[in-house]
Image (cartoon, rainbow, N blue to C red; front, side, top):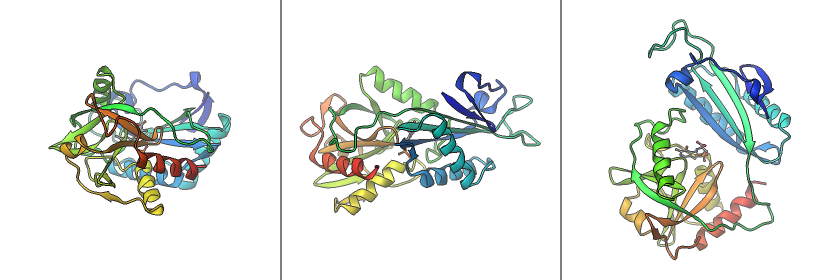
Length: 281
Ligand code: PDD
């Protein structure tokens, strides 16, 4: 595996970061996960736009412009042989001389790290097929800026692990009676023939896959609305889907131990998932 660290490409086991890095000390940084299909980063412009926004929101100067990031992504993908990959990109506030909550003054260069890992992807001519996954609902214990793609993910990790401990693939999060998103995914449900997803706010991440699902629904005449969703609406939804760059659109067939709809991936999911597979390559 070839990784990128602070201006250089190197073998993964050659990469070294100081323990004084603010990413290590404070999780003071942001990240992106970009799917790569057939060697081509998918929705790269959208991911780079979100990256720039995350940097702005945590007051980190963008070390590169769009063209610079694009070149780096393409080069790292090429050095790892192309194909289907998950491309990870992280930027932290750099290596401090001492541990201090306040930003280093004068500022230090950010730490920039990128790597790739294999991404399992169904063939383009293969219809969407899955058994679906189990999910559990949990209280959303995260902070108030879930719209920032920050590496400070401790709450997400604790929530995901509680789901795993319960034999489920994902935690669906509830804040003040309202559904926000999954611990590492966005959420859609189907009720009365309508596809619904919570509106963008500081309480959820604006997923690139979420945007694409909405776009594809509109393009193919599937009714989709962004509206607040209560835990009660979720509990008796006909279908529930999760979306993310690494999961695509995944049907939830069991919620809190009870079947969703008839307990199998729904008819609307099948239609959307097949549009999705066709669109991405
Ligand atoms: N997670 N919400 C949260 C909290 C997420 O962590 C993610 C993605 C999403 C979906 O966003 P997108 O469609 O842009 O991938 C929503 C990535 C994949 C991760 O942390 O690995």
